[in-house]
Length: 244
Image (tube, rainbow, N blue to C red):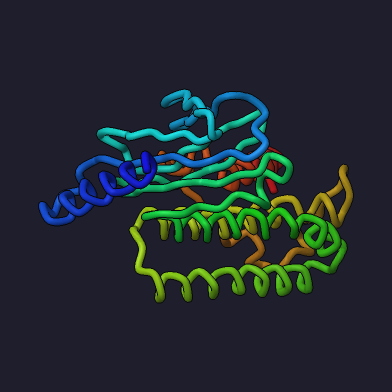
């Protein structure tokens, strides 16, 4: 009954925000952790802790966030880490089994669809690492063609999602950045995989191989702590330093 009352109050508050046509700057974040490793979960905004959320006797937690700044947040439990996109009026609940943290994680509530999409994208890209290593052995033109094809598949799925579920500009930006910077990183790493650690011959790469660099933003506050973004910057700056 207690949880039903909480859900009802959330619904009334969000409806009020909608009627007043304001963002309210208010969001809700809660959930349940199955087989918890400790008694709390820490919510971070960038690298700064927003709050430590303690589990109740049912291993559940709940937090009302006032004056929410929309953006990427992260939560940590027992050494495991995951990202959540929070925007005003969101009411997001998570469910996790620590025996299989990423695979068991599910978002429900208002704002859940965008987060489930991002989570699925993260998991899929992580699983592709072995494939990318093998692709790195292909000739440059073949590699680029295969990589562009795989990237476009992700873009097509994102576009289908956006057609079905109109989303905020922030989600659109984050989802596209997740795809783009992951594949930008693969291009930065490729010459070292193909030519070897100590020799890179840029003359045999396709002329437009590094054309994507024109799209790179170096001071994006929305993405500065986003793994696909800073994971790309390391090999990118390394190549620039080498004059590649």
